[in-house]
Length: 244
Length: 86
Image (cartoon, each protein chain N blue to C red):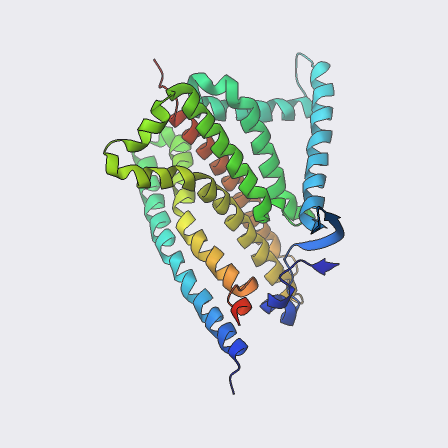
């Protein structure tokens, strides 16, 4: 196991053995570049496996659905209804087109965020995971902007006054970065805080860190998931013609 | 005798601390939002869930500036770009 690239610069990590960074596990070469399979990849794969197993199990259960739901079917219906309601509430008549994507995003980010509870390093505490999520949102926003506003997508940048163009442009480009940094910063700060507690206070950290796990992993993770999905929907629906 | 590297590390640690002053603003803002949220629930208890979700969304957005400060502090502490300039 070697740490990637930055090895000379770990201040705390090198001297006090506090370790919450991403580790490289397997090195490989691609087009002359040295690349690593990192702990993030492993965490993402585990999260994906969990979601896939859940999806297959839910699919089988729903195919054999009963009139009066019980047990697992209840849980699945609860999740789907909650997501439907959330998307419906903020997207109105466009909800049908986006509910699949938003639900997938929600489940992935939520399971990633709470994976810290199960001893994984949360994948969302790696900027390489959150930035693509932000860029996908940016792509969806701009695609719908051009699809619904046609040429107005470009002239809209000069509204309400032409000299505001640079500010409008920065406002558009800042969206993926602010979205991804928000998620990344929140989850990373939780991860750092928990590893400081476990590794610097290792003798005293018995039992009571559970309370902090509830805040940093579950509460903060759920709130940030909700915020990410909500902002994606709000920004997207903002570019579309309103309800008539 | 202070080495160049030691000076940079010391100043980076102070800079990381100063960067976290950014936490003051979001703290005040979130407190104000929570106060008005409580006020709104008091006036209209029926809309509690709507008010709570709006409040949390606003607070999470307000938190962003604090997180920018946090990102700067982390960069200074754990991935210091200045050491490479020596």
